[in-house]
Amino acid sequence: MSKWKDLGTLLMEYGLINGGDLNEGLKLQTQTGLRLGEALVKLGKVSMEDIDWVLSKQLDIPYVIVDDIKVNIDLLGKFPKEFLIENRVLPLYEADDQVSVVLEDPFNKSAIAFIEDSIGKKVGLSTGSGSKIEELLKQTFNKVGLPELIDAINTTIEKIKGTSFYRIDFFLAEHSCGINVFGAGILKHLAEIKGHYTNEDIFRAFDELGVHFLYEQSFSNNRRFVAVFPLENSIDIMKLPAILGGYGLFLPEGNIFSDAHVYGFSNVFPLGKPIHGYPYLATKDKQSAFREIIYVIDAAPAEFREYYVNTYLPRNCLSCNGSGCHICRDLGYEFEKIEGIYSSDYINQRRRED
Image (cartoon, rainbow, N blue to C red; front, top):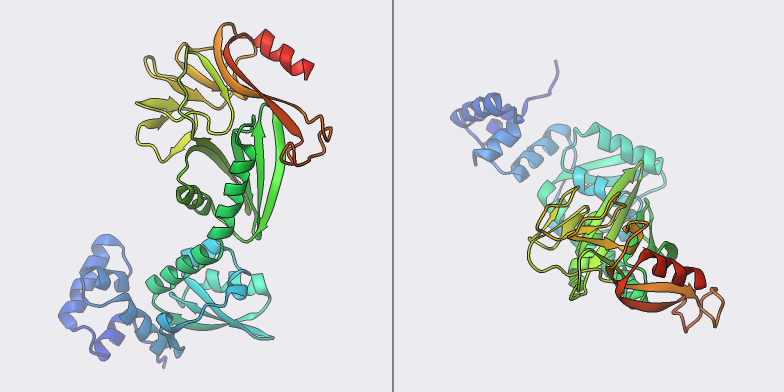
C-alpha cells in the first residue's frame, strides 16, 4: 500500500489546519481552479512556507531556509535568468555528477528536466520558500549584472551625443548582450558584454540613468532584440512636419502619439497612425506626409519640401578615413549639424557630397 498522502491530510496531521479549514480550501479550489495549497494560502489558513515544508516531509527531501544561503554566482550564470525567476529555482552547488538546487515546486518536472538537459547532470532536489527564492534571485542579478549594463549604456550615450545615431539596439543572447547604434542609415557595432540580460534589465538601466524612451522589441528562439529611441532633447520645433535625427530625438510636452511603444511618459500614446490635432513621432516609414508629424530622418518621406529639419549628417572622418580614431570617438564618422527649413533635394545633395 502506498505511503503517499495528499496535501490536505498532511497539513492536518502536522496540525497546520483543521477539518473546517480543509473544507473551506476544497470549496475555494472548486470555485476558482486553484490548487489546494494555493486556495489555503489565499484563505490565510497556511503560508507558502508551510506548504513547502510539508511537501519536503512527504517527498523526504531537505527543506532549505533560503535566507541563510550564500549565492553561487558562477553556477547561477549557467542558467537563463528568466527560467530561474519564473520557476523559482536557486542553484546551490555543482558536483561531478550532480547539481543541487532549491526548487519551490518539487513536482515541477519540466524545470527539473531543463536543468538536467542544460548542465548534463542529475538534479539533487531540495525545496524552500518560492517568494524568498525569487527575491534573492532578483537582488543578486541586480547587484551582479545591472551595473555593468548601466556603464555600457552610459558609455554608448556619451559616445553618440552630437551624432546622427538616435537609436540604441540590444541583441540579448543566452550569455551575452550586443550593443549597436543606428541613425542616418548607418548601423555601428559598439560593444558586447557578457551575461544574461532581459529587456526588463535594459529598461531598469535606462531608469537608473534617468532616460525615458520609445522602444521596439522582437523575439526569435532564445534571442531577443530591443531597439531604444532615447527622448532627451527639448527642441523648439519651428514648423511641422519636421525631421529630427540625433541622440535624444524629442522630449515631448503635452499629448503626443507615436508608432513605437513608450517608456517613462504618461502623455505619449503608442498608436499606428497619426491623430489630427496632435503631434505624431514616426520611427517607421510612412507613405505620405502628415501636417503634424515628426519623422526620424530614416523614416522621412523620400520627397519633401519646406520641412523643418534638425539633424546631423554623417561623413567619413578625414583623420582616419572611417576606421575610427580619438577625433571621431572611434565611430568612424564626423557629423554636420543641419537646422532650418530644407527639402529632400538639399539633404540628399549634402549626403552625396559627403
